[in-house]
Amino acid sequence: MSTAISCHDECHVMSCVNVSSLTSKVKMASILKFSRSAVKLSKNSNVLKTYKHIRSASTAQAEVKQALLNVPPTKVTSLNNGIRVATEDWGSQTATIGIWIDAGSRYEDAKNNGVAHFMEHMAFKGTGKRTQSQLEIEIEDLGAQLNAYTSREQTVYYSKCLAKDVPKALEILSDIIQNAKLGEAEIERERGVILREMQEVESNLQEVVFDHLHAVAYQGTPLANTILGPTANIRSINSSDLRSYLDNHYKASRIVVAGAGGVNHEDLVKLAESNLSQVNNNYPGEIPKLSPCRYTGSEIRVRDDSLPLAHIAIAVEGAGWTDPDTLTLMVASTLLGAWDRSQASAKQNATVLARASGEGDLCHSYQSFNTCYKDTGLWGIYFVSDP
Image 1 (cartoon, rainbow, N blue to C red):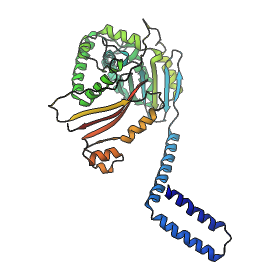
Image 2 (cartoon, rainbow, N blue to C red):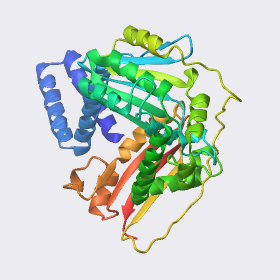
Image 3 (tube, helix red, strand yellow):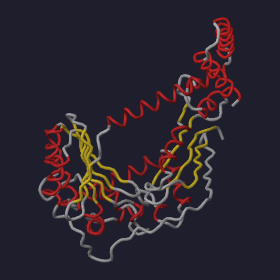
Image 4 (tube, rainbow, N blue to C red):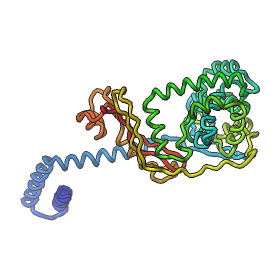
């Protein structure tokens, strides 16, 4: 504060030198006085640091503005049946196109927990129009990638392809979500695949810790469900369970078709209309409702003395996607950053916590996280340390 006031005072002296009608002798004395003051100021490290910070902030602000100018606008259109189409056209030669569905483990209960993830596995096992091998050949001929994943709130099917192949890619994705075959032989084969996947997840201690975190933070609510579901459910899920889940959750009002890269918005809207117009909002029974998930501050410890390190997650309730604080928490998470011992030097890391972790030997690694859901979230840090 005092430095800023001092700087303001000296600038005022310079202004007086420029406009006053003094004699040349007085002018010279004033100029010499200002020069000495300027030299004194230049030796003040706080002033220099403040100037550098201001200049750095101005540069960063200009870079952000320029970056925002380079981002294409997001265009959104709703089809007659309620499906939303969203695009960002970057004018590139490649594109990513996907179908996002509000259907994940949060929409399950204890009896059918795991069915959304099971359905994702069945998506690429053939449809009424294509066998599994035909589906694989078509994607390979395009030189494209086809993939899917399940989270607690969404199931996603997407493709990465050349921009000219977007029509074909969307047609294949649309066929998958509307006409999945769900054959008994394929179900039994995927059952074994999912059970092996569960073994892999259970050996990944970070995955285990985050499942425990959700189990206690949202205890007694659907967000406590794991994505894969319990072993007993995986062993018992059948084609009837899968078909029932499709009929109750793969509905037009819960679907978003999104594209980025070389994607023309108007063209994608027409493609979505031609491929997905048959998807309706008719429910065979009661319309599923997404109930609020209560956050409960609590603790869980699982001790295993055979493990050499402790894996720990600490979290507080964060913000949902539509909460005004979401962006603030994202920035805060970025400021905490991440670090592990494989990095060459913690001293060169931009974040204070990373430098402290490396220089003070606080942990083997850490990473901040900001997990958002529709109406709640988890914000915190995960770290690995000596017990």
